[in-house]
Length: 70
Image 1 (cartoon, rainbow, N blue to C red):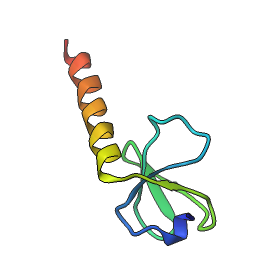
Image 2 (cartoon, rainbow, N blue to C red):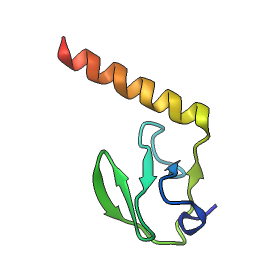
Image 3 (tube, rainbow, N blue to C red):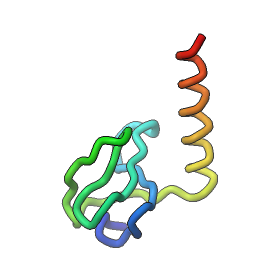
């Protein structure tokens, strides 16, 4: 699938990039990673995340943030 085919708000990963790097489609030409907007080409290949993968991503992120509080 390409970035252009994703719906705005969809979460995805890039092939060959660490599993922890989860992006979100912010507009037709930008995505966000950790709340920072980054430009991206419409033809870039992406791997859309399903609901289970998104839930795991947020659980891992929450766990990491809780460890920082200690």
